Amino acid sequence: MRLPHLGLAALSLIASPLAAAEKPDQLIIVSFDGAHDNAQWVKSRTMATRTGAHFTYFLSCTFLKAWGTPEQKTYRAPHHGAGKSATGFAQTRAEIRVRLDHIWNAHLEGHEIASHACGHFDGAGWSEADWTQEFTAFETALRDGWTVAGHPEMEPKGWQDFVKTGIVGFRAPYLAPGEALPDAVRHHGFRYDASLITKGPALPVHDKGLPRFGLPLIPEGPKAKPVVAMDYNLYARHSGLSEDASRSAEFEERSLAAYRKAFDRQYEGDRIPLQLGFHFVEMNAGAYWRALDRFLTETCRKPGVACVSYAEALDRLQNRPAIARADETGPVNPSRL
Image 1 (cartoon, rainbow, N blue to C red):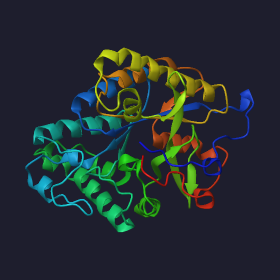
Image 2: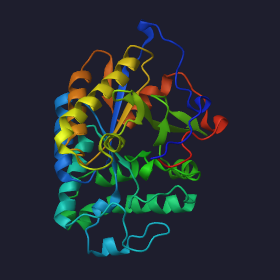
Image 3: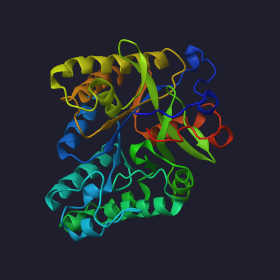
């Protein structure tokens, strides 16, 4: 797995030191890519209720299309054949109905639903028109979800307004944004992009007015080697992307230690937001989700801590000190991991 070259000038990681009385809340931003498995919807929402956290769910819209249906067969991602998806589809319309209910209730609970496009294809080489095509497919899938699920009468009041105005963030599949993505995201009306990688926790860079967040590299393991703060990257580090249930407890402790160290450095320092990424898949027998649960349980209700969605973080960061503009320093994450 190849990491992009990350220059310090592009990252602007550290603001000027803050006195204790000036410190803002330490923000913890947890997100889930895909947002498909209904069992994981239950588990994550339960975790959030218990810990007081708000999450961002980056939804892949092919999970609002059932395999073998006209919706699946006619979906076409840019430069791919009809009915193709790199991440799969829902198995039944009944599964979609349950997922839609989770999406709506998560929204009511204060969580954020954001876009992860549809078919989870690598768009690093896509044009702005390609991205716009995928954004439109996402909106259509969400707008028509209850009808596609076979229960238009169950669509909640306010659903259409939620679809039109409530989806304000985007993350590119594979964290592979490409050169055309910022303009596409900006012109489509999203408030932020969360597709970058940063060399440690960082405030969002501003790319021609578009806030762009990045998952940080954090020290992990006996040698404190940097790893992207995402479960998939820990999985790759720990077991080479192969399940090793026998070492699940070890991987849980290593991950928890990494989360704690990254948090402590910011909480005792300048309180740059800490971003952690996850998927709706319990890799290495659930090691990373267990570590997350323990971490949020011990941190979210600490004084001066807020576990928030990206949209909430963006509102809270409006008055934080400005950092270097991406259009002045060059792209932060120009290549795919």
